[in-house]
Length: 273
Length: 228
Image (cartoon, rainbow over all chains, first blue to last red; front, side, top):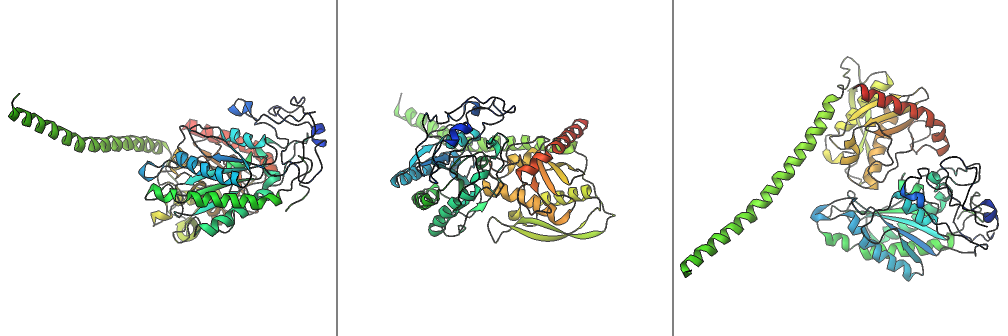
């Protein structure tokens, strides 16, 4: 029932989609998957041309709630990200944060998928694709800033944008986040509230910013940025790791009941928290 | 070998080790300085190719509101009023405003844009969409991070919003090219709403409508750069 070959789509719209027929057979339970039909990146020559192995439900997918967290340690490879004192590189430090965040999330019963475990540098689209290929997932990209008040943490979500639908009923890849912005805001506020409790000087709520990584993610998605690589000693950052991990696990767990998404992917949100 | 020679040899070796320990870090610093100098020279050469920024000393001095970073409140912008001789022509006015923004505030801590970044071109289309073309340094020298990149873009948008009402939307180019992000985080593929609808990014539908004029503007920027 899952059609991977889409005929008649405009140039640049590449397969890896559910057909509307398959979608219509997904359960109408509001606690169903957030997986939405998303077009692959228009630039099929990029690495994401091989992109998200979309689930291939031979049978209607079972009703699922939130059970997967796609965790994205930013940068990697030759992209070191922010560089600070004592040779601190963002690409290294985020991996350490991610390892502990992963354990904390798994402790809350979530399955965690990392976009990278080592010193690789997947493209931004490849990172989004890891989330877009899941059912019942959220996406968190993890950054260390080079600026900001040391010892604070900020959560970012995309600004409100109206969901845009291709005439075929598919969500364009480059606007994949649009239908999920309200859910992302809810998730971001819950996670940021946990940061505000633990890290003095952090904002109380999530902030809106046009973060490129979030735009192509078809799931509730947030960016978390920790300040900063400019700390005097590496230990200052290391001491933040347990608090960041605990805050993220608690925030995501608190979001679980709010994970109410469209019964039929690609349609307007049936219910908003 | 006698004990006396051994002592001498040991002493010479020790002196050589100490000398190397002192000399190599200094040598490394000199190499790094030379590298910086080369990069600055390249940037300087690029700037020298640019036409000088228009100076309108004959224009009346008016109060302009510049948005630089707040040193008191981390991660936010603060309006600063400065008197400038501003042109009544929106394009010239926008160039003067952005060059002042790039020049930076009195307190360097309040900078939102790298000191060596330059405005290479600025155009306003008939529908109110402006295209600002910045040097590569804007992307390469800005501190990496969501907060710093957002602050840079917001300072450009809010300063234009406060001083050039003609600009409704803004497209930011880097060295004549449309780029995915400023420095890995903030999305530059979109147009930013400047006047009329607040400072939120333009809605996707609007961006689609603007795609054709923006492409034309990008071509115009590229053409202008070739002529230079």
